[in-house]
Image (tube, rainbow, N blue to C red; front, side, top):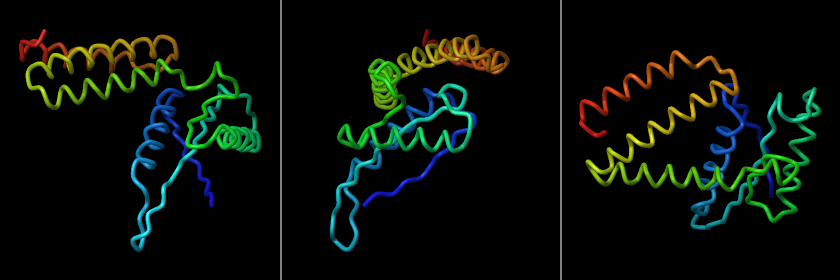
Length: 163
């Protein structure tokens, strides 16, 4: 049995949506669904369609492209995140690796006290660099927010003598 639904993320970029989608897929599929002592494994196939990036002009175009990508996920074995029509536009392995590394650093930060704080400070500094690049290339007008974050982060690092 199969169900379909749409999640719209108005203020999210393609990367954010892809990462969230893949995390949701993993979260949903980690444990079987159990009802009345009967367990059933669940798989989730997701696709990403981006207005302004994908070749769509109408809602019908949007739905048709989403349907085509979901069908591709099913044909490719299911339980996948499909973010494009060609291999070049798939969620890049480097991005998946980055997400794993971020999760690893967060685990270290939670478990390893002072060393974790150093890792967390490094991760936060890299996140600011990513925000600056996104602001520059995507024209998001985040410069004021980024300056604020940099100032707060710099103060936190100095106050805790992490640097």
